[in-house]
Amino acid sequence: MINLLPKDTVFYDLFEDIVRNVVVAAENLKHLASHFPDGFHDIQLIRNAEHQADDLAHQALDRLDRTFITPFDREDIHELVGGLDDIVDTIDALAKRFPLYHVKGMQPPFLKQCDVLVQATKAVSDAVHKLRKARSLAELSEKLIEIHHHESVGDDNHHAAVSELYNGQTDALEVMKWKEFYEMIEQAIDGCEDVGNTMERIVLKNG
Image (cartoon, rainbow, N blue to C red; front, side, top):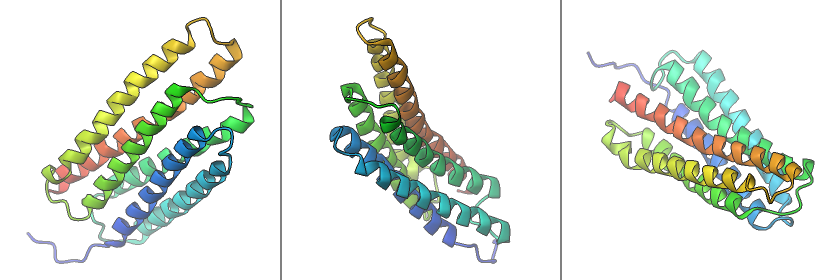
């Protein structure tokens, strides 16, 4: 039976607006790391992106409460919005720790992870923009595979970075700081894969 009731397509606009802030936050984290210690203006830009993403997430969830017909299941909308917002929150929390922990220099493996994060968030953004018109998993599969690939590379980078931290040549306090930084950026990259999995489920259920 064909459902002739209109679905609220404004949700797609909100998804796309949130993911734009996800990419902005990742790009500014990369800029901060690449220009350290001269990139602290990027911390405020990341904070701005976090605020905007949070406001948009609240708008989406408020609309979810007030909308009778939604583009797809309510729990999937909630999970997609929450997953995107979580990525920005993690990047923001990470960036604020650099001045808080009095970091003096940047580690090369962290720069590699910033590259992976930017690529992963851009792949997520591409997938979110395809979601509006996707009718089959095949239409998203290329981007979903790309997201999974970036997550796998991020895992490898993370293991190598942590192994290097524990080589006995790094001050114990620095080990504590950087272990946390690496865990947080890995969490952000994993968040991209979580969002990809959510989109995969959405298309499979609604295709």
